[in-house]
Length: 171
Image 1 (cartoon, rainbow, N blue to C red):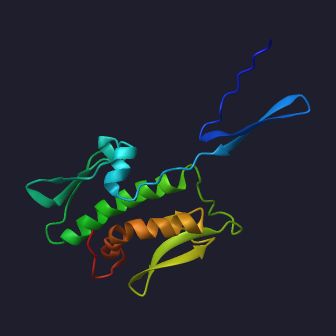
Image 2: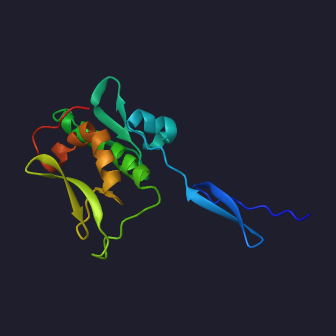
Image 3: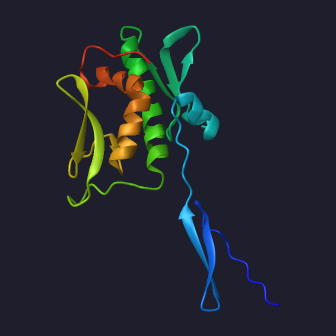
């Protein structure tokens, strides 16, 4: 009796096993990824290294200290706490966007690939399809974009000060 072991490809699971013409055919399917629906759930699912967690000084919530592949960056926004909230939201949204997109990275050099984006227009959040102008919140499918917007609209609202929009929303 012969034994052959197959390694299940990463991110896949066995869909079905059948025999055809004296051979065993194993069909794999992509595992359904569980996507976080909140920042807290994201941190539980994917432990965020301390260096990527924005931290506020407990005595002054307008002082941000964060490390993101560069030496410690200090910013004091005593006169503009909405701006510091927007920066924290930006870091969170980038990490969440990357989680939702998985291994997919958009190719902005070619106009042939649609990217499904979340942006601002007339001071409000809007959705769009884009293929040439890089936008921060870009997704590989409409469904991912729409689910992201449903789950993180309050966090996206906090980006408004970065765009020069007066209101920042609430988380």
